[in-house]
Length: 345
Ligand code: GAL
Image 1: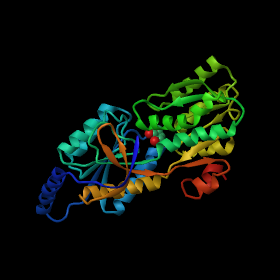
Image 2 (image 1 turned 180 degrees about the vertical axis):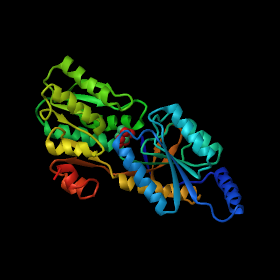
Image 3 (image 1 turned 120 degrees about the horizontal axis):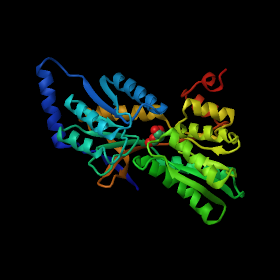
């Protein structure tokens, strides 16, 4: 999936440059330099991390002298394409998309390109289109670290686990699963671990995650060692389902995003770990690159990922495991949450 190449120089679309030049001369003729405008189309703001992403991205873009027009589609594909069309009509200089559905949003990329606007996929890849740039964290590594945490804790113990897989529409969910399988498959093959139940949580919905755990307990019994939950948003529902069975704190639960409530659950003991993604760095890199693309300046990145049509120039950021033991030197040391917020004192 990932192809390492030494240096990929993002070649700028000639048509994009011409379009920009036209819009620039329009605005200059009506009086001075026009402020750069970035369109930011978000899948949702319901999950805590996307609020952080939006705020950090907007703050950085402002520092660089750009305006951000941000809009959330509340998990609706048609609405997200419409949101992007609105931003295109508003003549943004560059479009940044957190796709709800990686396939559906290829249409938004096509429309943006028709209007000579370059597009950056933020965190989630957009598939089957001529995407200009992808800025994300190492999502395969996320899955490896989540599964690796379980593998370490149950070494030699024939663990029985339940797995919740994220939505089929989110390419990241497929990448988390690939990473998890790297670790789990050899253990399953050696009979050291069994997945007693697994299911997809379409839409990253808490109620679906809860239903999966309840179904797992009904089918496989209470003898469960861990729930491999893909994100903190689902982990909250997992812990709730477990606590209704008197199993919270007794079953290892994974997570991702270092949401504040998840960090609180970790120090309380009902969730074992989460993955800290450097959201500030991600937002800063994405905003810096959006400004460059918006100004039609060349950019240089080291990686690329194939999206089914092209090798998309990609920025990949590292991720870190956070558990009770490492909370202070990760999330708190980085200023993501304060000690008082997490420990309540
Ligand atoms: C994924 C993202 C995760 C998590 C999840 C639910 O695509 O990489 O960090 O936030 O969506 O929103």
